Length: 549
Image (cartoon, rainbow, N blue to C red; front, side, top):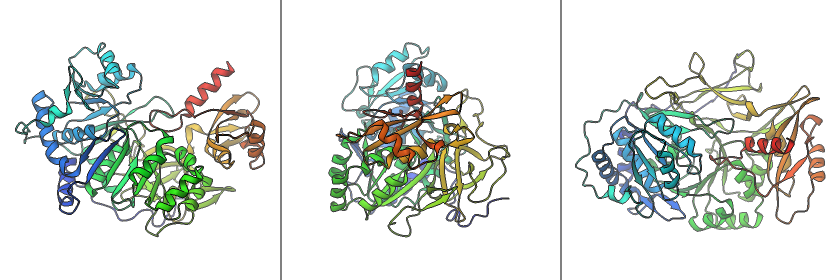
């Protein structure tokens, strides 16, 4: 029977059917009446380059004018390969004004992916920096149409147009007759993380991005400043930076994130909020002295944990260590921006909400954001199930993608949508009677041991309960007798002398036989991290399979 869910989301928000900047710019102007004159919008760490909130609009019109002189036209794609955020996102605002869509890629991605993606969108303009230029130039040898390079960073790269040159324009070439269809015109193509296969190009329109921005309004609990270390082509930067532009929140961005530098920069910039992946949160929870210092300085009010589910020991340790900081799981995806967040209207929580389901405790990801409808459907029948019953999470929201990028000029691929336009997330989850969502695992990652289905996240959570385990990743290897056996990858605390035997027994003492590490544990200096910043389980599995063969 259908789920009887109460309070599934707060009030819906009207999403105006206007080009993105027709909403953002007026909100920026209004905010500038009260924000400090020199308040920064983006600070790029460690370069220190920044863009002030007061500079964004005038800069955008100058840059848009300069880009128009270069020949950039409404509807034609610009591609980018850069670590930079401050200068780059200033250009992105100008491109939004022009109705010019963007697509980007990580600077360390394969050259053949650059070639493929540039050809897919027929990008005649590419934004680069001094770390990506050589690989982009190598890729351009296989492109059969002319491309103009635009550079960002400290200084101009030869044979490129630099950011500072764009700023010298007087703005007179800005085209005032650009007509942007908010529902149909593509604003950005976001690459998926590739955690379960080859990355796909997620197509977002002006309206879907604006819906993603508005859904976050008054729900993140972050005021004044925040810190993040996400890719500049991802869903977090495209949604959160525009939200912060509307609300006067300074964003401190790690150009290249190294977790060992996190504490130093937290103490330097003292942001009011931070967003991080669960594996970083698990590492941070083990840094007792540093957490105590953050607690004493008392600057951090909100810690958003997204990208996947935070494990219970980590969540409880952070809540206990930082009693004045709201630890808030947030769930979203490239295909739909933010979907759910822990409710922060009831003050600081002693523990994050959790529930027991099937004999195991699960942590709440949060309630759906405004305009987000969710339902859980049976894996086989696809019928909606009752609260507490696990199934696949489906959702409807105006922030959902138009589809995956297909051939340029053709209809977008909507393979992830049902016939009645529900977006299939590929995530196993359940909801409770109050409408809270509990994410369990990616369906593609669940493995079978005899007749039992097992979530790798559950086994990782058990490993992380050991005081000497800083990071953990679990994958399943094929076995002819029982179908699959789990293998654990572990990063130990420096100086730890714990052994494989000890960790295997530690898990065995806490879990039924089908959730144990039958293939043992391997120790690593660091877990492999994908281009999107998450633990790369596919890479772990490849490493294990290579050693077997």
